[in-house]
Image (cartoon, rainbow, N blue to C red; front, side, top):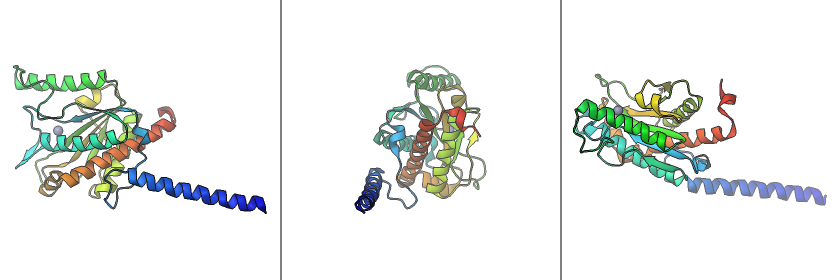
Amino acid sequence: MHQRVFFLSAKKAALLSAILLLLILYAAAVGSEGHSEQPVFSYGVAGRIIVIDAGHGGLDQGATRGQFAEHDIALQIAKKLEYYLSQGGAAVIMLRDNESDLAGDEFTGTIRQHKKTDMKQRVTTANQAAADLYISIHLNAVPGSSWSGAQVFFKPRDEDSKMAARMIQEELTSILGNTNRKAAAGNYYVLKNVEMPAVLIETGFLSNPREARLLADPEYQRKVAYAIFAGVARAAVMQSEAPAADRQK
Ligand SMILES: [Zn+2]
């Protein structure tokens, strides 16, 4: 009888600790006041080196529609992502944190040479940092206005990249609630040339006027950044629990 009483209180204690832990995690989920944003177990990103590459910059504005420019919005989302990942304990390296690109404003070659130097420098910096993950942030644009939705691309034939992309895509889908796109292998220079797992996120279509307005809204940018962070954190936890070979389906 005595043992049974002890067993019950131990169960209650365990339940109370579980509730307390959930409350702490909830409080730790920085700025997650949105309905669909769940608290994130951020321990997976603690101590990881993560490179964030805000696309374009310098001479290259990327896609533009009206007053909206890709280089500018990509940087704003990248900075919000930097905040979340840093809060989670990651060592974040921003490939650019201002208007300039990585070739430098004093570069004197042709625009094509300038762009090539810039892209090479992004890859070199990520590789020299020996980062655990490379995340590139872009915005999409096509001739028509009907396409919309965020989509995540991953380094071809790399399981860790694929899993990170899938997790990020799932979070974008559930938190933004406006895309059915699926993660896909991406034929991008940066994805093919960085040595670590790598994803490139097309956060939405500037060519869709409604989505362009959303993408320029700081609160929407924060949600996009939080979704990317949540996906990265989930993938990091899974990667720490099983080696890549065991996760192949
Ligand atoms: Zn781009």
